[in-house]
Length: 375
Ligand code: BMA
Image 1 (cartoon, rainbow, N blue to C red):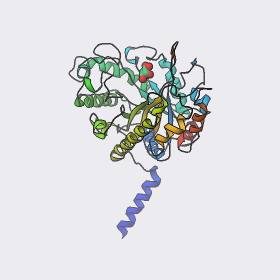
Image 2 (cartoon, helix red, strand yellow):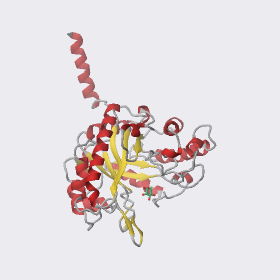
Image 3 (cartoon, rainbow, N blue to C red):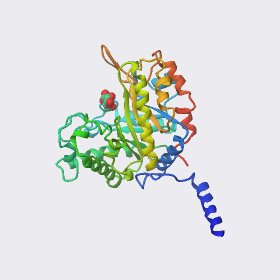
Image 4 (cartoon, helix red, strand yellow):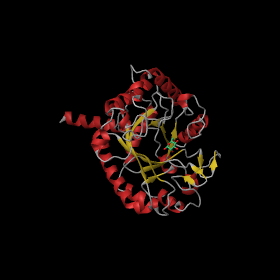
C-alpha cells in the first residue's frame, strides 16, 4: 500500500513540477524555449489549429516592405499565429532570398514575431550543389555527391555553416535563441527538386536528412530547431514513410497540398485533405510527433466562401498544430497573379475573417495567450 501511495505522490509531484513533460525533442540538447515550444505545441494541438502565412510581413498583393503591413492582418484583423520564411540563396551569400526578401529584414521580422508569441517555420529551396543551378535542377546523383565521401560534401557543409550562422543569430531580448521549426528537403516524394523521389534512393534521402541535422547540432551547436519532415500530397502511409529518417530525427510531420482547378473541385479537395490528415494524425500519434499542414492553398481563392465552406470543412475533424498558407506573390506578369490569402476587397476576404474567428482556429491573439515559449 505504502508503495502505491508513494508512486502516486511521485506522479503528482511530476505533474505539478513540470507542466508534464510529454515529448522529447529530436535534438536532446535543444534549448529550454525549444523544448517548451514542442511540449506546448503538443498541448495546444488538442485545442486548436494555428493559421500561418509565408512571407506575411514582407509583401502582399500590391505592396512590398511597408512597416506593419500584412494581408492577413488587413483582412482577418490580426496577424497570423505562424510565420513561414525561406532561406534559399543564403547558401551562395546572397543578401536576398530567391523571392527577393532581404535576410537582414527577415531576421527582424522573426524577432518581432517571436516577441508576439508566434511561431516561426523556415524552408530552404537551396540551389543544386552539384550543378550550381536552382533547387529545381534535378541532376542525377546530386544527393549522393553531398553525402560524406561525395565530391560535394565539403561544399554542402559550407552551406550548412551559413544557415547555422543565420539560426544562431536569432535571439530574443534576454539573449535566448529563438526556436524555429526547420523543414528542409520538403515535398520529397515529388520529383521537382533535386532531393526528390526519382533522383535519389530512400536510403540516400534518409542519410541526407540525418547528416544535415547531426551536422547542425554537433558541429555547429545549433540547438534552437524543431525538425519537420514534410512530403507533398500522398496516398498511403507506406508512401509517406518510405523516406522517413526515423523518430529520433523528427519533431513534426506534415505534408503540402494545394487545390487546383475551378471551384467544382471543392468536394474532391475536402475529401483528399480529410483523408490525408487522418493518415497523418495516426502516424503522428503512433510516434508521439506533432502533425501539421506544412503548406496549403488555393491560388487566387476564387470561391467567396472557400475558407468556411471548403478549407474548414476539411480541417474540422482534425487536430493539427498549424496550417501554413503559401505566399502572396502578387502580380507576376500583366495577366498573372498569385496569392493564397485574401487582401482587402478580395472576394473571399469576409469569409476569411469569419474563419479566423472560429473557436478552433488560432491567430495572433490566442497564440499569445498560450505562451508557447514558457513552461
Ligand atoms: C515556390 C514558389 C516559388 C518560390 C519558392 C520559394 O513554391 O512560390 O515562387 O520561389 O516557393 O519560396
